[in-house]
Image 1 (spheres, rainbow, N blue to C red):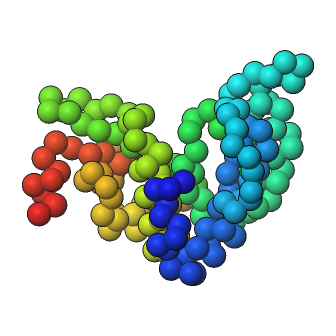
Image 2: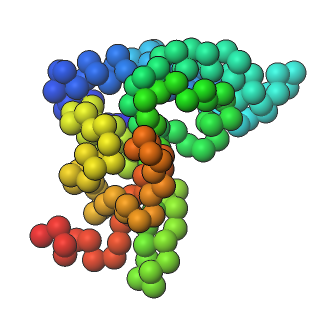
Length: 178
């Protein structure tokens, strides 16, 4: 969450994040960014004795709430993949954009980012609550850390403009930024 740089956000952006941000927690279900909780470690895909998987436990509780909250909204989904199992998505939103980060190596091979992805997501949240992008085209103006750029050819977008947005960092990005 530190990568969101909350204290540096303008007041209006802070308010937008606090009012519209939703966090899915393995221990608490749905949270807002300013909910006070203890430090804990219970992943959403963890199995708990006599309860089963946390995602299966929370699914019937949080799904109706999320589907109502998201009705007709533009949703930027930055959740890790395991969180999808906790939500019965009814598609009530206007459009949902799921962002995936990839890094290309010198040989041109592209791999999903796992190390450092939380920081990238936090930086994207910082951008979203300031600039209020509603489409993938709006995201193309973002000066992302480490040279990440939208790759429209690799992205999978539907007729509503929703879908998966692929952001790739390629070798030599430092030289292109200068």
